[in-house]
Image (cartoon, rainbow, N blue to C red; front, side, top):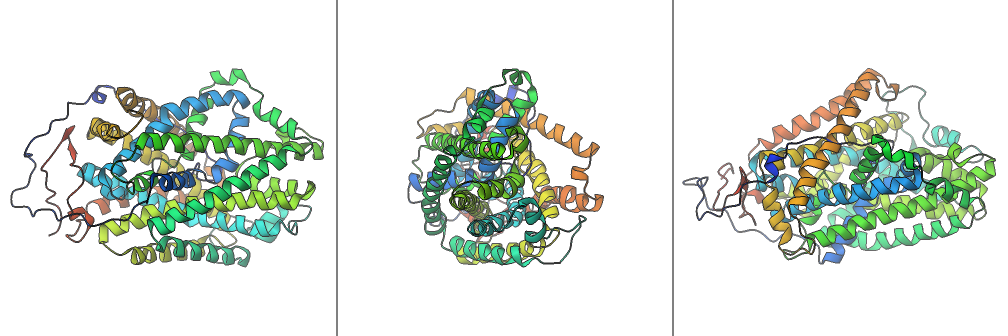
Length: 563
């Protein structure tokens, strides 16, 4: 999806001793010492929605992974970190961290057949807070992600008339967003953004209310092929533009010296981590909708390589277009290369205005952004809706309304204003670093070293999977990935403490940055301490027993359910 979910972001990772990876052998007692005497017998599981086939799941997972960051972040990250040489650390990162973490998420979700909070609870009661942390992270991301999807919709329409004129930057910041001169929070609404945002939230409400298969699955079955067709069309057309070869040379010419730079490797791991939608509940939720006998690792490999293939395709299309832009301006590609909002809403409108058949480029590019963003936003909302359904045993329609209506109101209060861009930028930076990155690191450490559940998860993965998860998978997940994540997180914290992010006022950073990040974690811990009712799905017989101190505890009964 979600990849730096959005704008300007970097990466990283941490450490972990090695002793626990070879966790104790799993025993299967006939009656666990943890069984609570006198506890009520769990009720039989209720029928739960799911994907009709593995194919639908793969489309949905690709729809989540292929997001805005694939299109507007990867090309510049590759260009800025060694060009063609960057593909070496990128592939290494995909194989050693991306797929391993993806399998980790799949195992947790599919084993528990539940939303992220309940999946972690069923794994071990101590880990439930991680699932609620995931829900909070997705809540924040959805609030601002909807705004960018709305921008893409408006710009696709603008492409027909070149609404931005001769100065796309001035148009974007001025006439379109009407950005205030100084950062702050205002209720000065901008109808240019408000109206398309209302439309986006309305369509989301309709799609999500239809359910997992008829809504989430069906939307991805339609939008992902459309996205692929549109983007392939954009790439083919971009390759015919004058200067396209210069752009591709700039992207793929290798700088082998960069391989000796640790920051390049961190950037590669970061790109993989953010682009695969791993570490914040999406893949846990989606995998829980799969049928019991499913090739999890095989499906994960398809999703992982499809995501990377699309990123490579995006790099070709974007830099071919940037090569044309540089030639038209009489400058070097390095002078026009950019990422994030600058690439999408300033550089590409310039290209559209100058290129022959620019209207077609605009429709294809902004249409791709629209579909990529919308399918990612669907996956973000599904994490929250699934959690509400499990906790309160509400219907699909009721859960959708309970989630989307409040979120839409908050989103419509903050984003379509003259200060919305400032709030968006801060939220995006902090929720990626201290939400996605921190939660991913925490999940690996807690599950690997506190619960010691990796052998049990590996056993579940290996039941029907074509790619087996063994000791190498556990070592990569429990040692390599947290080392890189931890290094990146520490590096980012130091940078933010020394230099306030983008020079924003302290009060804005305190509220929408540090405060928001702390609230997500503290709130998750508090909510995890609240009991689940006998009506909730936690009261049902779990499909797999919990793991306590490295042991699979058959016969364990959850005595904390309010009966």
